[in-house]
Image (cartoon, rainbow, N blue to C red; front, side, top):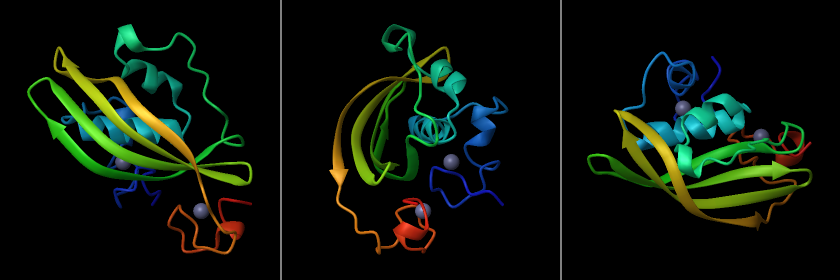
Length: 150
Ligand SMILES: [Zn+2]
Ligand SMILES: [Zn+2]
């Protein structure tokens, strides 16, 4: 079983992949947010484009390659939903080269014609202090240096 990148403890196919493959439509802002995180983690630019509000979507969405940036972990802190508007507050950990970063974001989602779309967010990125011997952030239980920091 390939675990879903979003950290839900479900398999990818039972979790975010069904949205990414357009088999199902996310019913909540959090489901959309998780699936977009998984799309970032698997470099699925088409899905990110499709789920981005047209007026705020960047023209150029070139994602870093898996070699340049890897997403290790997502933690959703809070999600709220009104009829056609929602917010999700989360942090996401990534590694670039020998450094780890933590992104904290408060995202706004809007629903149009029944589809949740990412509108915008306020975010902050900070370097995350790590030691090579600590448990890897991806949850593998291996040491960082033996896992995602390699
Ligand atoms: Zn997922
Ligand atoms: Zn790891």
